[in-house]
Image 1 (cartoon, rainbow, N blue to C red):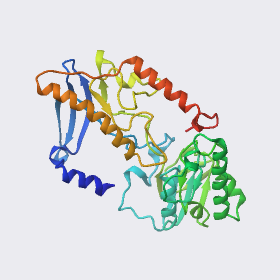
Image 2: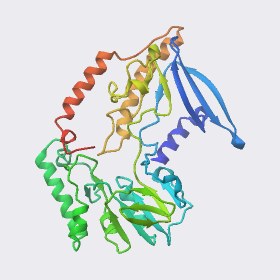
Image 3: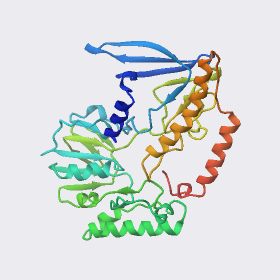
Image 4: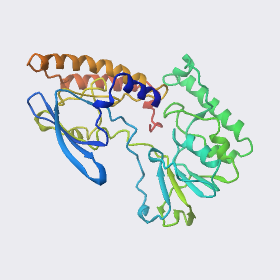
Length: 355
């Protein structure tokens, strides 16, 4: 994917239009059919400069999976060892001969754990809740797999398939299998794909810890009455996926701030446009995440949708006019009400599902 993006940038000569090492801190609608963008740019020798630009249309492409979610565990600042999150991996750090704690496991954890287990002296995986895991099979999704979202019988078949896979890889430890078996419906959360996670958990120097961490100490963690020493923490606790634009102060019409407007829940029209934010659109917005195919499919569809709006706004600018595009509050509400009705018919609405 990285090679594809680099090739696109080269082919369309985009690098000259990119401002690297820059952080957008604020975007404000100024009422003149323009938006002011406040930017902090890191320069050489640790210096930075702030500047402002204006645009007739703003597109947010910051995504969902870029801001690390690290649990607030007491004593974190006391720890003397190495700490990493999968989103900020230190490639120079060596794991051989070290006692490692992996905290959390999901899509990142099932990839990290087998690799760490292959070289660490000791590995402990801290699990809050287990995940449904099936073997990797890089084939197009069948109708049966699509049915896991909406058909209870198909979900039961999927759950049994995952249980059989677990029993096949850990046949001699029913207690460990029980701790690795979810209590929520199959498909409620992302079904993970791994051929070697269960095998890694079953190794002699790897242990699964399901008790909660009470606090972090200078040498490790406190679990119950026991202090467990570690040389390194690896957090596979995911991202702040619901904190859209959390580091950008977004203000729109009537100086309404997006952060306060979304405090009761995230919503957008088609997952792309937001009420009270004229000439603004986002990629990978609320309710547009996917867990079964590449999100690039969704993003490319959104780009086509947004491009049509940008084109008419730019055409107005070229002839010396202006054009404002913003969804009506009623349209946003109606779209999201319909969306929730559809979601209520899927596995995500089940009471046992906290996805």
